[in-house]
Amino acid sequence: SQQGEEDPQALSIQEGENATMNCSYKTSINNLQWYRQNSGRGLVHLILIRSNEREKHSGRLRVTLDTSKKSSSLLITASRAADTASYFCATTDLINAGNMLTFGGGTRLMVKP
Amino acid sequence: GAGVSQSPRYKVAKRGQDVALRCDPISGHVSLFWYQQALGQGPEFLTYFQNEAQLDKSGLPSDRFFAERPEGSVSTLKIQRTQQEDSAVYLCASSLLRDPGREQYFGPGTRLTVT
Image (tube, rainbow over the protein chains, first blue to last red):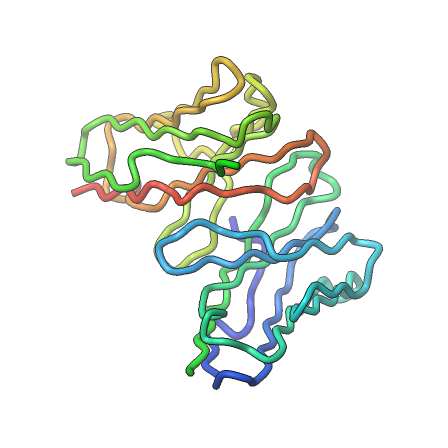
């Protein structure tokens, strides 16, 4: 089953604007990761934030994690048309020692040129 | 270097047929995962291998699904007596380390359509 919800399910913005996506999850986690999926292609890892971290940056990406609210956000600044894709958060469970990722339902981002 | 590859990229099967989906992970990657992604949804975990050992198969939806990785590298996901609800993209991923929560490298997926 899916870990939780992503919000919004779809987002359409103009090139140059910022895009913010939110993710909620249900269990205690080891870490949270964000992946991007272009249409018809596999997932590409973007960034990983550990449960003891609150914020992380990578280029135009900024991720926050609030373990008390069991939520995370992904901010893409100065968006480009090439950022058009689906974005998924994924967690690894702290209690279940398995290594698998539990994904959210994804946010479909469209960046208009 | 080469990424994770999967074959075939597309497979159409008639209901009741058996299918075999292949995954070639990145060389040297210890961990291998299979996920199922329905249209418009996030991927869902099927099974996990560490080398040749299948450590978790809790996500396999029925006993018609079987996965193996006999030599600790290439893996095959087999679906017997396919049904329409098996239609989905099957993603394979590998990661280098045994530690939980490392980033996973995904293949392009096999899109299975059961008619």
